[in-house]
Length: 264
Image (tube, rainbow, N blue to C red; front, side, top):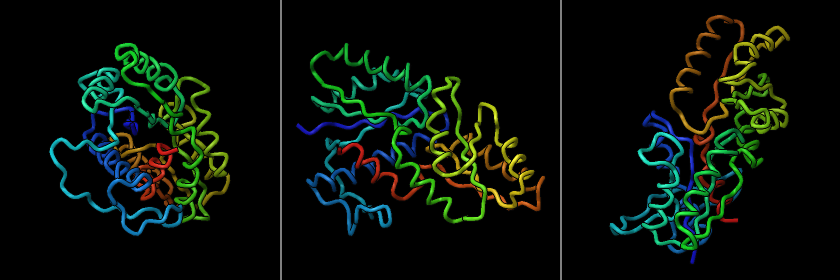
């Protein structure tokens, strides 16, 4: 049997995050069906970074139709993750579940919480379903291509990659590696050095244009605060041109690239 797929995200109290996650699951479903076609759902797509897929809406489905990609969250859901997984397996009657953790850093959630929840679900389900958990999303270097494309719009700007940050030192390796590949500086939302510190250091070193690349998946409370912070920095340093990029999931090729990861 073909596996069912599960995108596991952090979760948020901001409803925009859940809406974006649900939409992403639907889009990845469309892209997956193009890679293993049962019904054509893409029109004129070319699987390249330059063109990406052109998504079209699926025709209306019977009420019992289940899209191959489902979503779940560690936080912000009435049920803990292991119960969400169990309910999904039972509802779909699947024997294989492939999970993709949509986390950008290998912090506590990736190294402790997620393995624990998956183990609880696996123990409860026994041999009913085999689990295949892929590496967390931040492990994959295709994110560098998305970030690099955003930076190409402002070739003279000093790029700064802004990540959330992890209290585990090894949890910050992924953003540090992404920043190094992009020749960008790295700042953290919850750790030092923060964005203001890195921006001020860049200006002291002669930067007249700054590009902030959010290392986040979706829009939400943090990106709202980030936009306000960048507006404040622009007011404080009017001689510097500031640009603020979009969260990663806003990239038009993002869903297709996730589908490729799941399809491997």
